[in-house]
Length: 349
Ligand code: AMP
Ligand code: MG
Image (cartoon, rainbow, N blue to C red; front, top):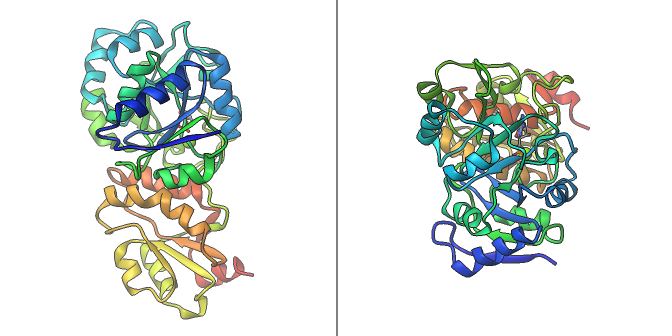
């Protein structure tokens, strides 16, 4: 049985957090909001509890989990020795949507890291999640709360639809603030590498960590069968219906103005594109407001699946700031690319 409790993520009720912390302490699963997306959490020190995460999510066992901490004291328990220089840098980005890879401590089981010697750690910028970790008294390992391969969950409505009956506890706290997952960087070696574009723009991280290598993979341009890091090889964020990325904003608009596609094609685009569309549309927000686009993206992918149309066309957005994460998610969620009406017609029945 799943306990579902509604509370304010900024001023969570003490009883609700206490009840969820108790679930974590006794080895259960809790779905909770962070500032990025909803997480599906368990006691990071317990191999058995973490195994339940993989089961509930149907997640491949070699796709590692992020360990969420509430204070720097906990960092010392999950990571090996961290230099004071790195600690100083982490204090500038935490709490916040930044995950770093560090040498793991012996307390972290293999289940959490996929057998890797590195552990992914972050301190979320969300009062409810920090209170939950603090009350549980242990770090919480949590991947995104979606079933594996599905779009991440950024609204508790979708968490309840997908996970009621699969977990012990769900916090019903409405939409999350950021809408895309944390930015993941590997700072364990000499060179700093981006593993996943996310809510924290790389430009801002470079001011703190120095130059960051951006791989094609982190932009979602390459689906490698030899993963750069565990967990990077898997299909991600996919709606059930086929979604195609338009080669340009203009082409997405051209499609949206063709009434021959009415009822067949749904457009996912900016407010500006939707304003002129003759087809059904889901708006992600103003074209230049990439924060808003990021916030709406995953919910839009899930709403798209509930419509009657055959396929979806999504427009590209500018790849700066949060746009790097937005385009990474869009590329991964898409089944292909479309640049002219002839190719598009072949995708329709
Ligand atoms: P999720 O929060 O569902 O997106 O999953 C966490 C992601 O963090 C995984 O897909 C990995 O890409 C990444 N990750 C977690 N732990 C590690 C690790 N030890 N090494 C490399 N990547 C990691
Ligand atoms: Mg995920």
